[in-house]
Each structure stands twice: as C-alpha cells, then as structure tokens.
Amino acid sequence: MTAESPAPEPRPPIGDGPDLPGPDLSAPDPASVFGRLFDDHAGPLHAYLARRVGDQTADDLVSETFLVALRQRHTYDPARAGVRPWLYGIASNLLRRHARREARGWRARARMVGADRAQDESPEVRTTERVTAQQQVRRLAGALAALEPGDRDVLLLTSWGRLSATEVAQALGIPVGTVHSRLHRVRRWLQTHGSVATSGVEDSDA
Amino acid sequence: MREVDRAGMRQVWTEDELDRALAGLYAEIETDQRGLAGVRENLVAAAEGLAQRRLDVVGTGAVESGTAGSGTAESGAVKSGTAGSGTAGVSADETRTADGDTLVGTAADSGVVPIGERARRRRPLRRWLAAAAVVAVLASGGVVAQTVLFSPDTATARAREALTGAAEIAARAEDPVLADGQYRYLATHAWWLRTTTADERGFSYLNENLIETWIPADPDDEWLLRRRETGNRKWVKGTEAEARAAGAPIEESPWPEQRAKGGAFTGNAPEHGNWQFPGPEFLAGLPADPGRLYERLRRDSGGGKQVLVYAADALRSGTVPAAVRANLLRALAHLPGLDVTDDAANLDGRRGVALGVSEDRERQEIILDPGTGEVIGERKVSDSLWAGVPKGTVTSYSAVTTAVVDGIGVTPAR
Image 1 (cartoon, rainbow over the protein chains, first blue to last red):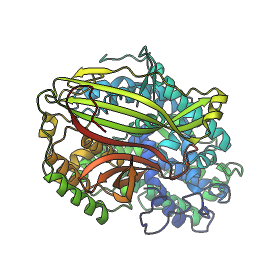
Image 2: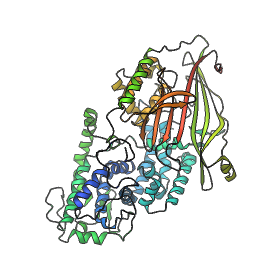
Image 3: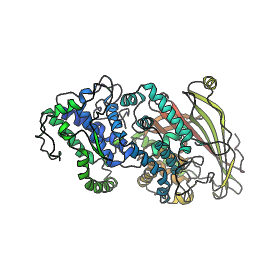
Image 4: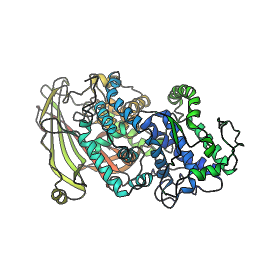
C-alpha cells in the first residue's frame, strides 16, 4: 500500500505524499538520510523499474538512481517537489537510455504472449464480452512499444508508479497541464488504437 | 467491457478495461529485491564517504572497486550536480558502456562504484538467488511484497466475521433444480465509467448497461446473451450538454443478440473452464481447503484486488454450487487488507455489506447480502483524485439478480 493507505504504519515514509514536506537531503549525515530514503523508496521503485526493463536492469537503475540522488542532493529543493517524484524523475531519465531496448521488449512481449499462454492451464479470460487476457496483453504491449518515451513515462508513472499528475509533472519537469493532456491523449489512443498498433506484429499462434 | 462496432473491426477499451490491462501487464513479475541489500550497502558507503570527505576509508567490502581516485567525493558531487533545478535531472557525465552496463559518472568523479561491474560480478549468484527466492516465498511467505508491507496478513476481523456468517448461510442454501426447458436467468445491471473526448476535452460518465444471460439446464446446450445500454447516464466530469456541444461521441451502436453453445459467446471460453467460466470440470478441480483455495485464487488472478474480482466473477456466474460458494467466501478471509468498507451498501435497492481492498488508488468491493450469503454485486470506488475523477466516486458498479425462467429469452415476472 502507498502512503495513502489508512493502514497503520510504523512511521511515515519521509517525503512521501504531497502534503509532507520533503526531507532535507543536505543534512550533514547523508548516510543516515539516504539509508532511510532507500528503505522507504527503493522497493517500490525497483518494482516499477522491473516491470519496465526487467529485474536485473532494475537493480542497476535503482542503484544509479540513488547514487545520482546522492550526488545531486544539494539541487533537491524540498519546497518544490516531493522526494518520491524527484527519485522517479531521476530514474525516468536513466530509463531513457534503455528506451529502445524497452520497446524491443514490448514488441517481443506482443509476439510471445500467445506462446506463453498456450501452456498455461489457467487462461485468464474474463467475461464473455471481454477479450482474452493474452489478447489484451499482446495488444497493449504492442501499443506501448509504439509510444513516444515521454508519453510512456507519463502513462506508466501514473499507472504503475502510482504518481499523481502533480508528482508526474515534478518528476518529468513538465507542467501539470501537459501531464493531463498527455495522459488523456495516450489513454485515448490506447483505448481506440491499441489493436491497430499491434496489427503489424507477427502472430505466431494466429 | 470491450466495445465492438457493427462490423466487429473497431475495438475500443473502456477506461476500466485499459486500467485493468495496464495493471495486469507484467504484474506477474516477481521482483527479487534481495539484490537491493547490496545496493543499499553501496549507497550508504558512498554517503559515508561523502560525509567523511574521504574515499579510501570505505573498506567495507561493499565497495568492490578499488578504482576510486584520491579526489574528494564532495568535489565530485559538486562537479556533477546539475544546475539548481527542483526537478530531477541527470547530469551529462553518466556514460553507457553497453546495453545494460551503465556507469554513473566515474569512480574518480563521485567516489561511486561502477555499477555495471558490480552487477556483472553479482549476477551468477543472483540468478541462483532468484530461483531460491521463489521457493522461499512459497515456503514461508517470507519475502514481503511492497504492497502488503503495512497490511495485515489476512482480512480484518470484521471482514472475516462477515464472510464467515455469509459462508454459513451460503453452505445451507439449496441450489435450484431446473426442469426440462427451464433456464437459469442472470441479469447484470451495471454502471460502468466511460470517458469520451472531443478535441482536448474529456468527459466522464457512468453508463448504465443491462446484460441478461439465459443458461440452459445442460450447460453444453445453447445459451443466450442480450446486452443493451439503457441510455441512463450519471455525469462525473462535465455535463451531457457540454459533451454534446463539444461533439464528443456518446451513443454506441446497439449490441446484437448472441447465442452460443456452452456459453462460448466470443469463442474465448477456455476448454477446461476458469473463474469467468466456472464449468463443472473447473469447479471440481478447486481445492476444498479455504487456505489453498485462496492460494489458487491469488495465483490465477495475480493477487490483491484482482482476487476479489475473480472470486466475484465466479460467484455471480450463476453456475457455482452452494458448497463452493461458501468455500470461496471462506477463502476470501485470507485476503490481506480486506475490510468491511460499507456495511449498508445500497445496490439497486438491495442492502448488502461491502467488503473491499484498496489498491492502485481505487477500492475494489464485493457486496454480500448477509441474509442469503449471496454476492449481489461489485463496486469500484476511486480512492484518490485520479484522472480528474474525485476521490470517493463510484467508478463502476454492478448488481446481479438470478431467477429460474420457463424458456430461453423469457424474463422473470417482476
């Protein structure tokens, strides 16, 4: 659960949530500050990155993100952004270098899902009107491959990273209005053209 | 719900469906976060190095590289920091050696270990650990997923109480017996959120759907499905007048009536059944033990709120015998974080107890009729302001009623 969860927490994560002030990262004891920062944010960040570029690259990216954060801690302004969007922003920038590989992964995913599922004894087909899970995944993966990296960031930071529009704006250094309009445009595009985008994908089990 | 136009060529996802697809994509990745312990050590070592303004004291073993130069870390940090932007920025001195092997600055620059090198050394071990970790998770539940970090291990006491009570009643219920020519009638009355756009403006409304299914006594015989939109709308974002003025499409094409043997309306019903098509073979294969049944649900659905969705799919299918329904309710008592979220939920005029899980900024609920032990519907409630939909908004709900009728296409007397 995120910090929005009503579940009791032993202590609030530092700088997580729009209403909490960001931590002072310039404190004289960076080891303690960053240790705690890591404990609060590394897990979810890793999960987010693993979904985008795989488990192992995620390890490296988490490491890089925090090391970049450590080096740039004096540039962090708690008054301007929460620490979570700040970290996700650093990670998003680092992720850019993997954008082509990520897109390759999505395309491979779009082709592979059918094969994966053929051996699966528990096909996750929803109700009669719904497309099968594998078709959904294939379509969506193919469509994500076709997105501009900036659009993909906005979509996935929102959907997987659970950042609010304001936080996405802080993370990517773009206006909130841009986040809204991008998100809106991307979602509409995925809703209406997701299937078109994958039509060119070779379908081994078609 | 997928929307298909008359030609069946254009497929459009609803907001709900897109969210579901996004949530499901790569959700099966079980991240192995054990590697993070090493990453943390490295980070703290680097931070300590900064604090002490020395690089060579860090003889902890966490820093494997001996290449750090003699310059101070502080100067490295200053040198590589970007200008005082409040937003994230990555300075230009990060270099990439090859796909996946990335260096953050250089060791001399920041006192930081080259990550690619460290990761490369670690990987053979990590592969093994990853395999071992899966076993460990299954054996002990020991590796705590981030999403359940602060959640209880099971449903709350109130939720368990509600489920147990409903299960007891459900277990005593008698399954309807169909005479020749009779059908089980299933009506799903649903309000689903739909978003429509014109230019750059988006409008959202809850759209009322009525889905009727006739299930024959022999489930292999022909089923009938009718679906229509009633035209009733509750506007969540914008008004109908505004949407029409902007030219946003609102009306959808009517749905054709569908008939199919075995209920395979779109040809995607799996041969051996599943939670959405719980045929006799599928039901017979479910564990009788509630704990194991929960595990099965969790595995098939992906866990979390999807557990509720899958259980509800089966429970409202009209084809699950009373004993299995009771067991499913007991299984849900194992769902972490499940709580009573509204003990007087009103669904189409029927009162029920809402049990829900909050996840991904929304709350997934199923509504139980405590008097009959039946699942009478589902709700989804926005748990935060998201995509312009205010917190607390019911973003979808469906109510289910069942009856026995005397023929295919015959509706029960009201």
